[in-house]
Image 1 (cartoon, rainbow, N blue to C red):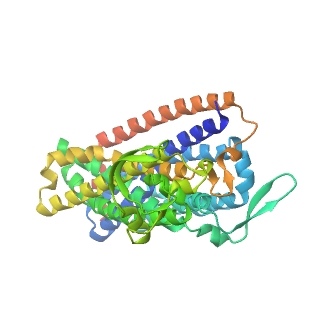
Image 2 (image 1 turned 90 degrees about the vertical axis):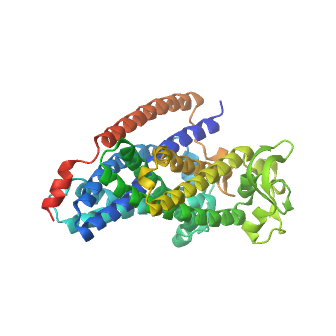
Length: 448
């Protein structure tokens, strides 16, 4: 088998599994801040009980996120050494900033968040909660900076030498604020908030269906629903802006996302379809001129299509098309679900509408699927480039890594990650079934 393909599969496996956990940590950080702030404002013990319960879930996701994140960084030196030598000056600075400004901040206050309830004042504990949430968001910032530079490189020059060439930073802030950083950051962070909000909604709905911890579940659901509405509607706005940036800087990716082949012609937007790359046609339901309108504000303006690029510079069209439309479909469904929940809350029937509660129990999978599909669209849509316009993916693989080594390590990673996933689901299920502790309510009451 091709070492390039195996290296991509291995990195895709490890990053997909890792990406289950950071969105939950980022989103839960925001929700914890809201819950603990409500406790400080109202001194209602229920809010502290809620905070303590979700802190335990946060600790589990944080631990798995750290453990699975380290593996990816090692792969830059093992499977992708040529790539690392080329972009080390740029990519390394962003990863170093992530460690200094994000991980140390987050982990430094994490002990107070987890174990400092009875050892520090409520305001100091609130400060630690804010710092942990801030650290989680800082981590997202620097990872998105590094990845966005790969999508839309800026602030660098290429230095040629007798042995190799490498990209060097000439303007650090141009690297940080490259053309796609901010829109991709906001879209990713809102997706993380959405993942955590629907986890809170799922657990709360489960308790209401089982008629356990009813007051806890009702209050948690209200907070989760507010965050879900903000994140879902915000994702719609940032997703549109992200598409415009892609159209400007990565037109081949945008063309693949909508299966648009003519080199320069007005383009519609498909609600669903299937791409036949050989015949250069899409079978499906399309809104004529809508892609042109979203990109240019005019349904008659042309959009650059795939035939404007040589075949070797085009991404795999149908996989990108399907991933993008599945992400949009899931995102639209989540918006509808959040708004429906808000409407029933306003009507006073949310907590008794059992069919909706059952949907919310399983809706926790929606944001996770949408987040994974979004990354798949971004990364596969960038192909055949590992750094857009600068370095092809095939050129970034370590030349010394053999097919046998890749197959063996891929098999081991699969087994280990499967075991970790089973362990995560087991521990999460145990914490949810155990529920909030009555002792937390008593401690909160005595600290009022």
